[in-house]
Length: 165
Image (tube, rainbow, N blue to C red; front, side, top):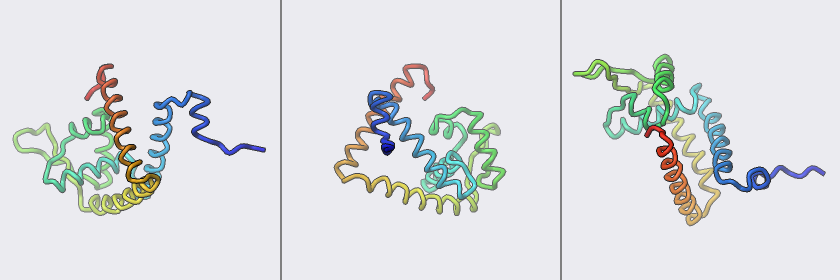
């Protein structure tokens, strides 16, 4: 009789329960889930994340430039350029010149992007609630504390190895 696949046993058998392997697998699955949920808008996960960041900054009355997106999402300039060009072609953003420095372009959302981002935010909220429902309040607080510690350590190691902040 076939035994039901058990991810935890797999992690323990293949990697001795290695936390990095566990986190990478969970991250991959969440990214697939996120990308699938966001793809109904015809955009990729990273495109939706960039729009979300732009929306958040817009609501605070703050401007966003390409360099900030590179830093926030830790992706290369060429990748950010590609994402922004795609968003521009899809009429999701507009890049505007800044007085005093023609090299810098302020990135703003179009009305169409604002509407799409509102719908996507509601879907993301549903996804978050689904994940949140797995934990009691105390467990969730512990989870956030563990994830913060893991993130801090991973960032520290990344920077020590010459990674770009």
